[in-house]
Image (cartoon, rainbow, N blue to C red):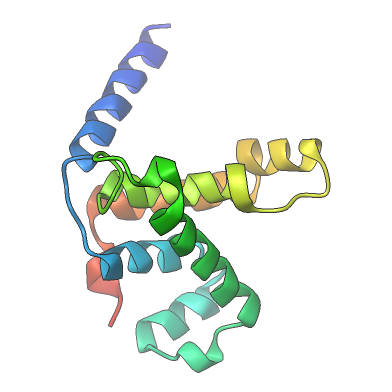
Length: 137
């Protein structure tokens, strides 16, 4: 229980900090693009600015997450609107509230141990280190 408590306190501290760090729409979109990146080839194209080489499915997913970040009522609060926390929250919120699944079990698996979890972890890593601004043109 001690590990869980200390991890919870550490996450709370990180999220509280992120809620006070303002970022631009462009930076939100950059984080979304990186977090939703499905493979190294897409990342390579992003770094080169080769948007024509990106799949329509990927571009649509990025737009859906970005739209969620701009329009969901939960994304318009002081702690989420144009903050690092809000960008991270939009990515996790996409998998919980927007993405379509064949059933609730598939949704649960994605969030707990699948694509939803993986994308959240990538978003967390980029947001925590703030490396995303250096990776995009």
